[in-house]
Length: 179
Image (tube, rainbow, N blue to C red; front, side):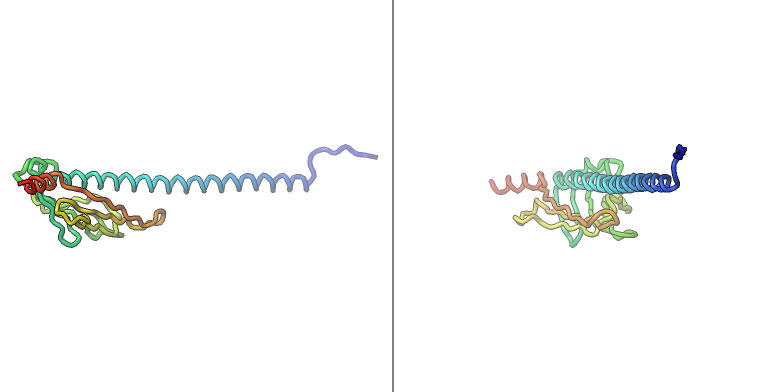
């Protein structure tokens, strides 16, 4: 009459295997998506940190500059010689730094070249443009800088713009205006 069934039928096994395969495929897709998101977030974080470092270095140098010259895409700053130790290994009577974009493999590199050295130091790689201009007021104590970050496989092209005023030059101009 009725026989007791032992185990699962072939159809039940196939359904169970298909469901298990769908669960594993979904989990794998979630893992791959999370890994890509993490990789992109890490790339953005690294790029922001590098851009922040460059901005701080430019801010410090422009704010303390005793003279500023803009020649095409080059920004030349004349600094107090005490800052020469950071770039030249010893204090100088005066220090001239030139920031400019140099071509490098796969993009441009922002370089800084102190007048005490024939070698330039790379400040940041992966730039398409470095654009120094005088601020909108036209005063020769403030500069506007634009750093155009190159597009990568993970990140879009971005331009960071900021304006900086040389404290030394602004103060000197204010004192001269009062006289």
